[in-house]
Image (cartoon, rainbow, N blue to C red; front, side):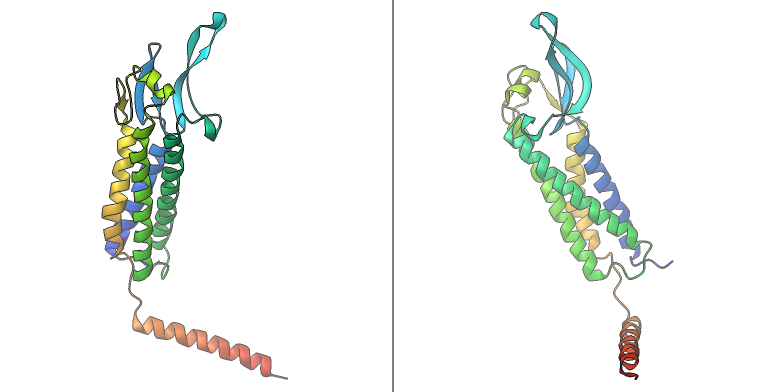
Length: 220
């Protein structure tokens, strides 16, 4: 089966899939920020958390050691993290859509032209920019009370206190940079230019089809 992508385009398709999977996985895993509370390790993403305190018997705080998302969008600790959740999620969704279309282009002839590839590269740039914006917004939420309790009560915007950034944060940022720089550049050479003969044959088939339909309609 003939591909609609060049050799560079095939590399672009698989790199696009890799960056989309990496960014989306990082988005859903609660390992963007690591700290501790009540002697237990705690980790966060933008909308998920691992290990959280609850009131036990005698109104004492105990740590529940499990991971989960916040009960509602408004329960996310800060406005900055709410914005980060929306912006990063939109960027990941855009990268996934482009990656799916790119992989399909490896198996279907005529699906991705040179111009279409460049448009998809522009969409990847926008997706990477959205994820990068989410990563930039993330430190603005470090001054919320919930994060300060985990970071020794000394954290602030762009100041981690006793916390540290997790691998998922770096993975999301790296995938966004790869999508913006490498994938966008490779997409310029991904699609095949339509051959003149193929274009002429397509026009002839379309013209013949219309002629046959017109002839069928005019017959008594």
